[in-house]
Image 1 (cartoon, one colour):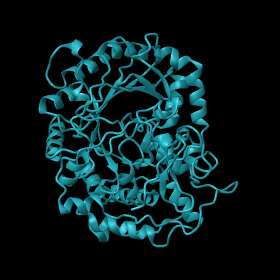
Image 2 (cartoon, helix red, strand yellow; image 1 turned 90 degrees about the horizontal axis):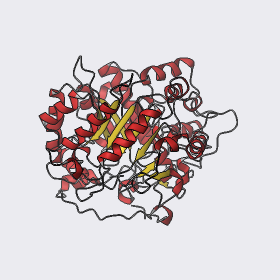
Image 3 (cartoon, rainbow, N blue to C red; image 1 turned 120 degrees about the vertical axis):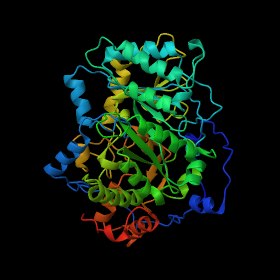
Image 4 (cartoon, rainbow, N blue to C red; image 1 turned 90 degrees about the vertical axis):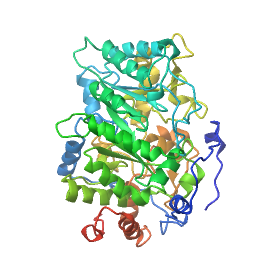
Length: 512
């Protein structure tokens, strides 16, 4: 394994040692170190900047319409507001008198899990939370700005407690927040959507029904179907069993069932340990009539060194998404072509200025994982707990947000992400994948491997998601991708899947 490179500019956030509570058996050890890559270059020579007139993605009108059709205007956490195409958000602003489309509340940093890759630095010992009265004040301001989507995150949102609300059952204070949002909007002509991230393990039949009764959309944790690996990833023995029980309760409450409009997205972190079994995880999700969001891991939070050095790179994403698209067509009747950094050509819209995220410490940021003020102050716009004069309306209508949005929307890269290079970008269907990955990670142009980035301002400047399949497409066009690499990755996925017949899903040479 290659030595880690220390870049102090990105290491200023204090890190906590993670005590591993899950026994490391020989089987688990093999899962943790699958040796996807040996850090060998996957380019035969350095990548060249595309020449004028060259495109990574030159899409037909039919391709564009197909992507818009599958994206539509469905609101979900697939990933951040990924169900809404960017052009729909633009229309909301221009035609619907909407100044801010979504608002995230990280209501607590407390969590029942201590995930090895956690970006939020949450665990059972964290106590930071947003007071209920602050949430209510901000929700009233959000209504004035036209916010139509509230996202409640953590930590684990069900652990939210504000002592001022008194005692109550687990989840009781969380549902007080949900009900408060509905109360603020009770006279509004358009009811807001409420979505939440949840790790599923704490969901009882009563809590599942409370979600359903309030129409809360869910983005849930589900990285793998391998019990001991899921337990290790969330750092708790027995977690997988609890999570599966929670999913059962959500099904009983109607999530994913025929005739129900209750939306559930299973969110899977894609790293070197979950890659081999992601096909089976995807099929399980689809068979339950849920949606599947896959988030390739990157250098951020606890996902450092070991988690990243072992290697998920653009070719892994490229091959996996093409295989999943083939599976979706043959098994579930869903057709899509992979182009973007997330399945179904979805993209994260939060960082574009479409929404804001308020952390449990009160910091107002562009998204849940944007570089903190200790790294660079430009993506933290104030603090709702420290500044008694803070105004959400004033921020959104002020020069700072206007300048940020302008910078972000013009922050194109030079290799794969700009309107001149990618029709997804030109047609306002993608704004650069995950901005956070651009801030913390980059592609080594000589080797093709993902490495740490020392410029966190790439979040909004020269933004290019290093785990987008477009890097593989560009390497194929320049004939510099290591011969046989894609076939080898495809073969690996087939060999490790227990849910498909290898003969039904042969490797298809990409047409570039």
